[in-house]
Length: 482
Ligand SMILES: *[C@@H]1O[C@H](CO)[C@@H](O)[C@H](O)[C@H]1NC(C)=O
Ligand SMILES: *[C@@H]1O[C@H](CO)[C@@H](O)[C@H](O)[C@H]1NC(C)=O
Ligand SMILES: *[C@@H]1O[C@H](CO)[C@@H](O)[C@H](O)[C@H]1NC(C)=O
Image (spheres, rainbow, N blue to C red):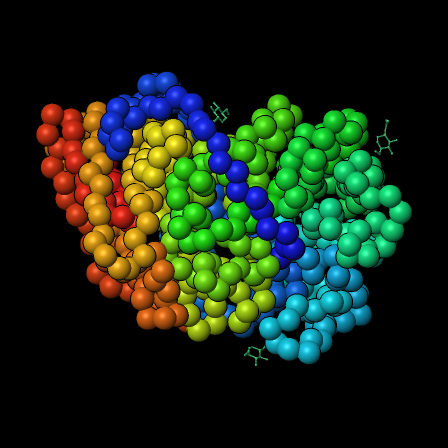
């Protein structure tokens, strides 16, 4: 969860690679054609669970394990998870309690203002077979308690990737967090992060264990570059990677528009990522989703937001953001959630398509320049050969009037035919909980269980002279298997 909504900036971009509006040349090998080729993490799409809600997702929401397993079935790797959010800085470790978490709320839709957690919380996180980032408290300024929790995390979470020390510290002055009671700005936060990184890392006896940063407010003020500039070699040894949060916001239409997404990622992250890559470390979106504060009812559960989820994941990954963790808040009060106890969320379908594109691939490129409504992404295998291309028509179709179609032409194809899966829904406003589910390759995910259902359907398209044309309707996606 986060408090401030991001700002969408419009930007004019450079160099178009496309020949026509939606004609794209598919490179025959990575490194060729003047494109940027971004190396892929084996599982670039992850899930973030709000700290207090994590035990509930893992013990009391049936769909959780299957929704994660569906991606593992595509990639061979369990998706990465992160446990954290605003409530990580309201949480204290209690070595005595046998409960996962202890808190009380006036209304089940609320997040607790204070809570405790036991070692069982970390034992539960340790049952997850994929990588886990655990977010611990810095706001309360009780480092002994945080070190005690970090020790349990290290001993119980066998796939522990990193520990966060504080979530979105730029808001702590307003939140009246004790650590921010004096002067609190990027420089004092950086000094605090550095000090805690060394003390916690040293206490648990691990180098490269800290996920540093974790701000939501924009770089460069609250960004990795300024933090890195304050780090000495001792601190650097403890930092595994850097994270930022992002909630672009907007209407369904602005959110799903490809040029807006490309601009949002470029404006917010290009420079900050470049600063981190120079250190040889990774950059991740540690917590993100469509609209801050659990999502917007009129936007976040809609198919248009699913298309944003897909496009944003791919554009972020292309920008050398290694992993993108989509936030899941209070069970039963979470507009942007991919799944809940009773219903699927449309955004799961967008994330699923992104996972399906990148599964098993070693490099990703964007074939388009990010300035139009039409996107094309290509992935390549470890030998450099193209594997799949995803075509996205972000023209808005809200359900009334005529739904237009864009012809995407791919050139440079080498086979006689290609097959494709379509990600579609009745309109950008379609919501699963309102009876209008998207489908991907003719299939859907069952409410409550996340089991895949329906007959898997591929379309076949003939290639002629190395070229094929694909009809993609407004607000629709085609994943082409080369
Ligand atoms: C991502 O980083 C790699 C180097 O690892 C670079 O070759 C590539 O061009 C970068 N991608 C983009 C989009 O800049
Ligand atoms: C599981 O969820 C149900 C429905 O909200 C709730 O009544 C129950 O207390 C929850 N159980 C646990 C163990 O969280
Ligand atoms: C490195 O920085 C930390 C905190 O920022 C400080 O405590 C430590 O003394 C510094 N180490 C060196 C060798 O300068």
